[in-house]
Length: 168
Image 1 (cartoon, rainbow, N blue to C red):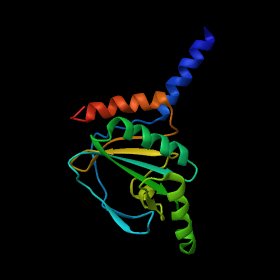
Image 2: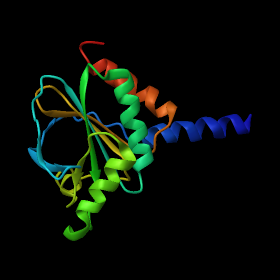
Image 3: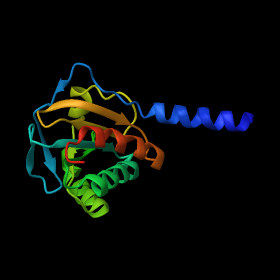
Image 4: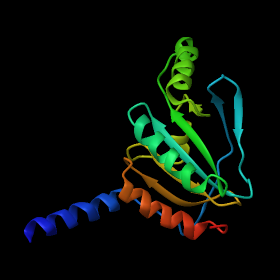
């Protein structure tokens, strides 16, 4: 019985650690320009008319970031826009071309690169990576989560996204 209670508490706190935050006062979508893996500058569109999910990861959270992105894409591909962003700060400009090539080979998908940790600063991302931020069609932040990927956490996030998505 005690083991069951402990397991329940651990699962409960694991879900709470996902840190769901529905913001009462929505925060405006930042206008951002980041580099893609080819070195081209890309603007992140602020109002796409769809929900938009940013999956923001770091070097240490690359596998979890990829798992979150794949889960969102598998269930919501045509219902929302997914923007994958890698925070790779502290890399000298001389090595960035090599890092872009490494990211492209390892991930095989479109990824924007935040070399200067601009998003972390602008969005006050203080917890561990990866972060998932959901923006409504009007460019307002409406949901935020962070932490390692697990199927339990994904099911909880999926429920929240289905509530927000008008086409589900």
